[in-house]
Amino acid sequence: MKPMFVDVHRGEKRIHWLRFFVFAIAVIVLAAVIGLLFDFLVIGRYGYTAPLVGATVALLILARVLIRMIGYQPLEVESDMQSS
Image 1: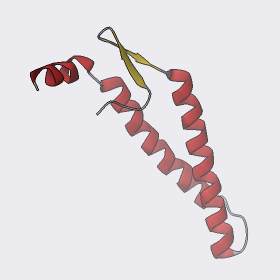
Image 2: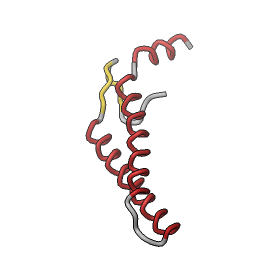
Image 3: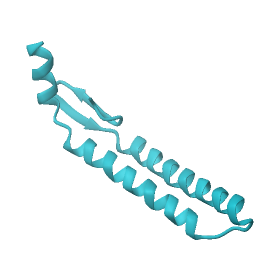
C-alpha cells in the first residue's frame, strides 16, 4: 500500500514534504489538546503531563509514517502489479 504523502511519477517517487509537515503539526497539536482536555475532565484542572504524553504518542505515530514514506519502493509495487 502506498503511503499517504508519496506519489509515483514515471517510476520515481515524490514525497510531498509540505503536506507531511502540515499533517505533523496538526497531529501533534490535536494530540496535545486531547490530552489537555482529558486532564481537565479527569482532574478538574489543567496540567502539563497529559498533553506531553499525547504529543509524545503523536511523535511516535509520525515517526512511523515518516519511515514508511522514506522506505517506500515504487519498483516493487509496479512489478507486483504487472505480474498479476
